Length: 441
Image 1 (tube, helix red, strand yellow):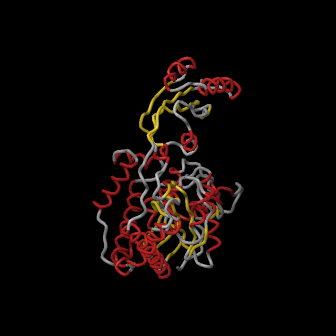
Image 2 (cartoon, helix red, strand yellow):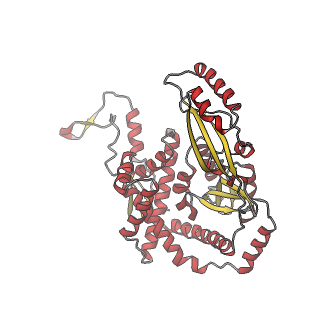
Image 3 (tube, helix red, strand yellow):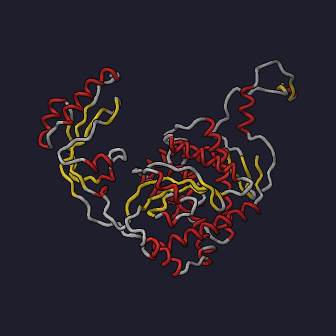
């Protein structure tokens, strides 16, 4: 890539704001403008400034900010100024790749029409349980826009269609390879199977250290409460990015050698340390796990009653402690579900029931407790001053006899095929980057 060294307009403005006010020489003829000035207000975000030209096509500061605000909103806004700036640089790189992908698709006479983009946009709005106009208003409220999301959708559709035409026909997966994997997986009956999320960041030997540091920062952000799905959606260079990095149910033998050993060390909801793999760095998150060809106790369907006790506004921890202790004592000796309403009335607690909830659909911290709980017993109290405290009383359990089957021939074939398509796609994009003319402004 060709680049011109120059400070972005936003960075220049930041330096100017920090400059001290002082008497200065003037220029500009009748306008009497000083040669050196201090800008006293931030730039107007509605002004579209060119940040990069990619083969002559513009990426503006507004494009970057609107895409960045999607990530910030997905993480609840809890992103530091330093992390925001790092994400901003990453998003600029992503937007450059997106431009290259759309341009290459166009050169192959692949054009994604507005109707296709709108259909995908409607599905995304439905996922957010909003009507399209409501979703567009929501995007605007977080500092993004409908146009920004639709451009991302257009890029994903164009690249996917290009790969189907130019890469997939030249990828071969042999039946013998698939059968060998299935045989190895069948031999692992009773072992654990994992539902995995993945973020892949490409790297060269020269950039490996920097990319690894970026992956570690993403891991730190996710552990602090950021959305793994949002990071995967925006930054992963794997085809699974479009579904938030979700690889589905897989076994350790189906993963790269460096990645597999990480999974047994994780609990659902946790993210591992990034590892180097051929062509880049991988960061994995464990979404869920189960045993192959064996019934999973977490598929048991429970009948539960919940007692919940809320605290008045302004209640302190010291004031709440006696009530928590009394709540714990009463529910620990509850004596079965038939007494729940009477105990709830005595404690001033609300009672609700749910007769069909699977253990795996409950919060991760509660799952092992409920697996061991006998009918008629209650969990320990859980909650907070803000949300109140509650317990769950087990009224019944229907243990699952369903067996988690191993992956089928078609599933193994599809995964091998996708792995090889991804590898070629990364090389394809690397070549596009190498030949691109990118002028930074």
